[in-house]
Image 1 (tube, rainbow over the protein chains, first blue to last red):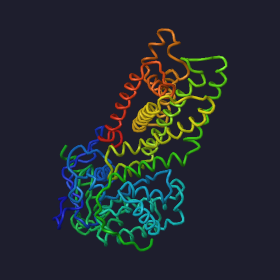
Image 2 (spheres, helix red, strand yellow):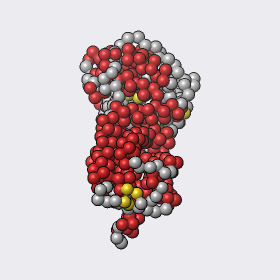
Image 3 (cartoon, chains in turn purple, yellow):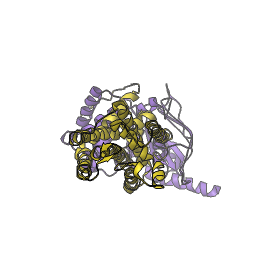
Image 4 (spheres, chains in turn blue, orange):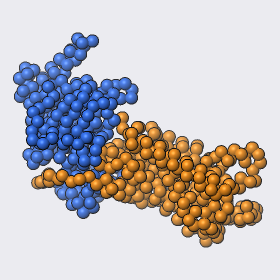
Length: 257
Length: 266
């Protein structure tokens, strides 16, 4: 259910039997299989606590997996090659409080292996792209919520990753900035970047994603295009599909107990 | 947002660059907070040298053949450097974990040992700044000699690596900022004072003399004192061996945390 036919070359993301059980016993991911072809705009939807952020953490080397395998463009997720190819903008701003906007971008580039000249060039590019010029010498704690969100995205993209993971990138931003970010993310995708997006905004997933997986209680419960999901679950909107699919999944689990 | 062309870079990872940038970030933090990280410890330790060394020197003539004002300088410098290496790294890593910007490092193509080294550099850099600053103040005031420069360099490197690694470990384990200050105020500071900074262990009665020998900080202070004065309360070889053993154990512990992700990643 979770796999799609593979295109030429390795998929951007390949997850096999991924399980994550936290130290307190919580099962966050339960034998998840998922494959995202290179170049796809992929959406991952699910309620709070469904396992979205844990899955992203497993892909980005921020969570210790219990079992299973994660590969990025054919490389094991924990390898240096894989990490070089992934950029992540996390749900909650996690910006270095001691660095200015320009420094945050510059140092991120350095961590990801860019030379100083490359990092400086890319930092200046990103400052212009995300309209951060006026705040370039301001430290992160003094930025507004919208500017922090811009900086998070700029940082995620600075090292030119092939797979960009956006964990609720438009949460808490105003409508104007949300549409501005949509336009930018669409353009990024049109240029060949693989995007993995999680969001609580159903219209956002419907507008942007070619392919959507619904996750609930650590399992992928459905995967298709927005149109395919609506047909399958008989919903007029993705929100209806989302509620029905998650409810069906819970009913199945309860029946199995 | 203006136009932007995403380059399809297939660049190889360069983890050495990551190490250098991480080290640069940690030293930049020290320099940005220089009044707090460097000036304040130099001033407070210089006051110790002035108050204890110069005022008490008139009442305490000599300790182990050295004027008292000279005798206390190695221990005071060691104490200031040790605290700086520890508190710098523990606070830097605790803040990075608390605000989660350590994720930018953990997700980067940097090897675990390079993360460990890069995050230790800040404390080492800060301790060396303080050590040089204090020596610049203490040498003309007290005339303290440097009898064995190479031994002093070795002792200082072992000591700052030891306390830098301890800071990394506490920074990773700490759940609140109180944990970081607790280790400094309740463990490091008392053990350093009881490690012979202000006195020679030879003047202590039994059983305090034997108890002092169980204090690991005693050997570190004496390794540094040997480098300065050419004299220590225990053999220099023993002081260096114990300091090196503790350093190795703590660096290994820190490395274990980075390699496994224990306490760094859920």
